[in-house]
Length: 227
Image 1 (cartoon, rainbow, N blue to C red):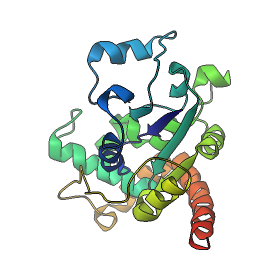
Image 2: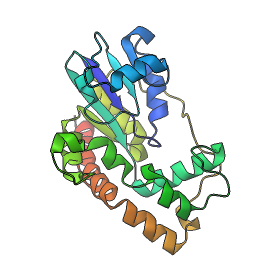
Image 3: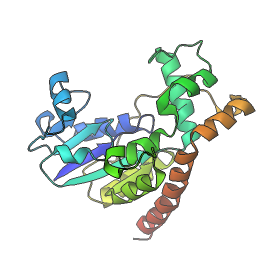
């Protein structure tokens, strides 16, 4: 069985990745950070199949399981779309990453940085070639794939998410230290009405996906509390 952590950027995934590295050896992991570029490129080939891998870590989309020879169990973490985009923007400004500098405005970031628009839906939905449909990204297939995951959590309920993972048989601990946290982060109250409206418009699918996930998560969490 291969455990696949679908790491959507700025959802707390770096912390979970570090936890999983303690559970699996380097030889057992297909780890996008630790792998050499040659092996990563092989994964991108249509016939690239890897054998004996027990854990997959990285910014991969749903469907990555087709590159591995064992049955797969997905799990992932979602985050409030507004908080995720503001965190991503602040992080990239702080690190001067992906041509985002401290002079880059939020409006410019939203216009030119594709992952800031429905990024969570992109990671979870079926690829266009799978759907046979030019409409992309597709939030309905993202919802279906989310429900196919063995477990999923919400960044806002991180500890409860870990407990749900464990309850579903994901080999992960409870103790952790938070990683990859942005320092001076832009807050909702600091965003102009114009920019907020643009952010919401560009993430309408993510908002729908998150609302769907939140309802299901609350149901699962209630079941965990009552057991």
